[in-house]
Image (cartoon, rainbow, N blue to C red; front, side, top):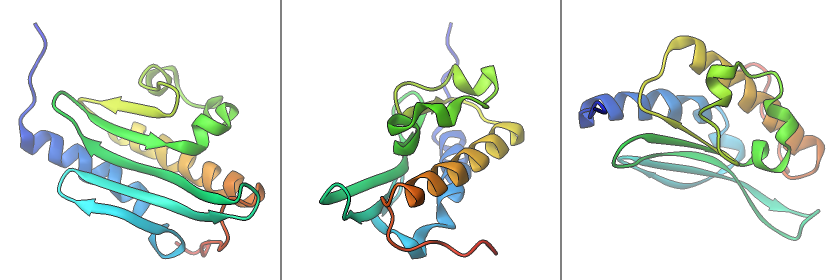
Length: 132
């Protein structure tokens, strides 16, 4: 029988995952920042002549989703992830019912790599400060 988590547990997971993206807010566009839903857009890409979505976090009924478009566009970014984290990844979205500090650390590293890849590919116009 599958464990049903409380909304408080999902809210905590949501906030931990959201914190991974927050350092990039000044360089991106916040599409949504409401309870249970947070999305960032990388901005307009001269290369693709359209807006590019970066990622976000959303509380669903049975899990919390962590959307990360760079890993969808550049799957090799996930090569160094642990098997535990990889098994939570679909095409560009990780799903979590529980999360630990090790996973948060891996996702932080992945997001920084993805950010740098987006910057390298001219999908982001304004780089963030390395001091963050």
